[in-house]
Structure formats: structure tokens, C-alpha cells
Length: 151
Image 1 (cartoon, helix red, strand yellow):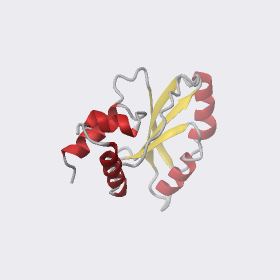
Image 2 (cartoon, rainbow, N blue to C red):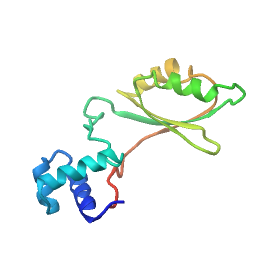
Image 3 (cartoon, rainbow, N blue to C red):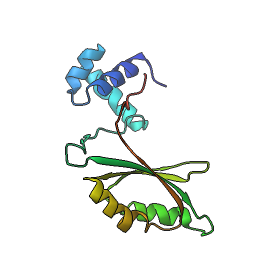
């Protein structure tokens, strides 16, 4: 599906997403026209889903990050859907993941400080529907964040 040219272009894009098309093409050793066609083909195939800005939430004043793991009371037929719908309404929830196994869902939550987190936890988190169990893990440090694929 991907050939060497596609891989070179994608590697360059991962390394410098803000680079111009001309710069990416030059670093990949192809013309800008070929790069444009390849990127368009990768978008059409659903491989390249666009670009986005990564904002450092710590620089924005959010110093607390907590990973909350939930087990739901599955006796309710819509437990999963109700929980996810309600969790999406909490602005400080920046990620929702589902799992197979003992833990059903994980929420990544950010807060300005511990007081803000405590308020958020009492007013928004524990009021989410169908919770059977919650486990909170406070993030101390991020040791690696890299979404680049080894292509």
C-alpha cells in the first residue's frame, strides 16, 4: 500500500508538521507536485487525516493530570452509552478510552490545581452515571510522548 516515497514524505511530515509542502518534498527527494499528489492520495485513502495544533495544557495553567479508570454497573442496558455521553460534557476530560477486561473506560482529566481537581471530582466525575468503581492515578511526569509511527 505505501511505497518508499510515501514513507519518506510521511516521515518528513511527522518530523516537521509545520513545514511547507516544498520543504517536505525537498527533504524527501521529490518534487512539490509529486508530494502534493501523494499527500492527496494518502488523505483520500484515510491514512493522512490532516494536521492539528498541539497545545501544551500545562503552559495554559493546567498543572494537574489524572487518569481515572472506571468499572461500570452493567446492569443498566445503556450504562456505557450514558456514561460516555455524560463524560463528553465535562470540558476537563481530554481523552476517553474504552477497554476490554476489568476496567471499562479510562478518562484523562486535567485541572488547574488540586483544589480545582477536587471540585471537579466531587461535582462532575462522581456524578457520572452507572459507576461501580473508580481508580484515580495522578500523573507525576510524562516520560515519552511520541505519536510518530516507525515508517
